[in-house]
Amino acid sequence: MNAHQAIAAEPLLKLTGISKRFGHQDVLKDVTLDVEAGSFTCLVGPSGCGKTTLLRVLCGLETTEQGAILCGGRDITFSSAASRNMGLVFQSYALFPNLTVARNIAYGLPRGWSRRQIQDRVDALLDTVGLAGFAKRKPEELSGGQQQRVAIARALAPEPSVLLLDEPLSALDAQLRVQLRSELKSLQQRLGVTTVMVTHDQSEALAVADRIALMEQGRIVQAGSPFELYCHPKSRFVANFLGRMNFLAAKVLAAGVVQLASGFSFPADTGPILPGVDIDLGIRPEDVALAEDGAGVALTLRVQRREFLGSTMRLEAVEPQSGAMLALDLPQRLGRSHIEGAELQIFLPASRLHIFPAGAR
Image 1: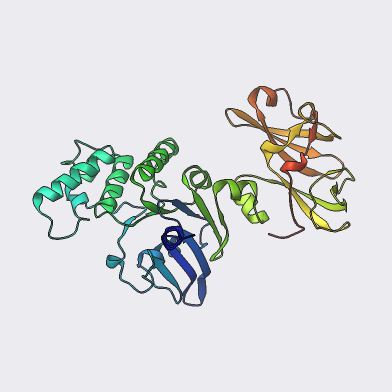
Image 2: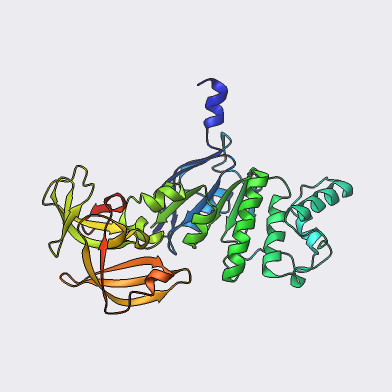
């Protein structure tokens, strides 16, 4: 690798050992994160995990007690918010109600621009966010989705190196959120702007992010692509936060074989875990297979309830001998044929099983 390639491989944003305390409470604990240039990174986690505080530290609205923040190789740890060249969209959008759409967007531009430069930039941004013709309207005349686009246009006006979004879709209804998250991802890809977004919506993060950083109690517990976190979770917490996962108490019977509490045994990739060790076995509802769909020894369950999810039907079923509950997702036409109280035969495909230490989070 030559020097040019080495520089190109460096992340645009590099956070190392970031810690933050409010009073006696540690809200960020040794947070380290790389953000690649042109990528879309989502910070997710339960309420109070520190994700919004991390975003505020990143943009300079909060200071860090420890650690360093580099942007493009420049140390901005203690730089002012105004000097960091980052655009920020607040959860409330924070538009000026007395200003027109055009003047709201122009507010984010540097001083010294000519009137023609300002108008050209505002017109270009309005076209970019799909609001051409809305320049003279006031925020109160816009829908929530349109206000969000104005806020994004204002943040993009000075051509920031990084766009920061603090739960920008949370105030919108469910259908509009789905529509606008797609538009947001498309816009980010077209502009190539490095984006970091805080969201509490797991499906939103999975849909738009190139990389997800999942936080718990002030720490990043796992960071990677949506596929990595969903399909290869490192802990029960990660597995259950992103989507739904069934957990079954089991133990390793022998190399490559596990046994449930009921005595039912089947193949699994046990890796280096020794026989006799207790484990928690995980499998996602969509990965549970009906007997007619697989091969091997089947496990008998009894359907306790059904939940209609539109294109799929979720069955909640119990393993009679142990009382263990499993959820499985089936296409609607198959799910309807399994009534409450009926028995069904399932497989737990070895390639879809996850093994976690017994009782761990």
